[in-house]
Length: 191
Image 1: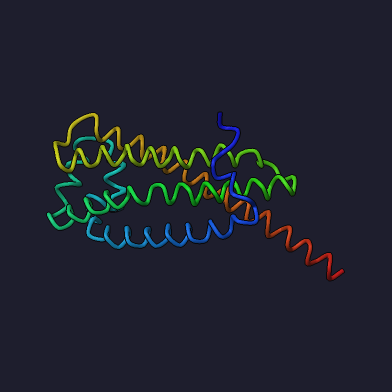
Image 2 (image 1 turned 135 degrees about the vertical axis):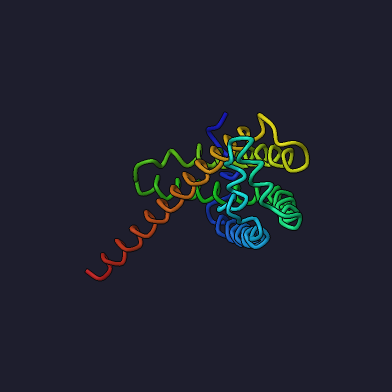
């Protein structure tokens, strides 16, 4: 079932023309999200919304919400809504980078070339986890902070962050493989 990925259907010679606009949109939305989250950094939430995502307990989640004034809570609500646009963007951008990295690694016979496909699917799973996490956060913001919502948010956020970090590391690994190939070609030309 997961032996292929819909993004793998993009021809290799067209990937850059798909990847660059995705990257620009992803980074632009990330900047907007970060700017809107500035009021969320408090003593109880030193990492802003991420502190809320990873609160893990009713008392900690409530303390974070209590540290946000009404304007900060509006910023949080705006960010959570905008995050639903961000999810498919980052998942697709990093997923495509993983598939691209896998192709580079496979061509150069580097280890872990087979990891790109599962990681690309993993990035879409990260977006699903992000949606579940946001649902838990919204439930606490506009309802009552009660179990199981802090734990639900914590676990979904933890899985999301692990998958995103793995995808980014893999993409950078692919870039390293591509650069080493270019450097090797350049040194052969000079010899």
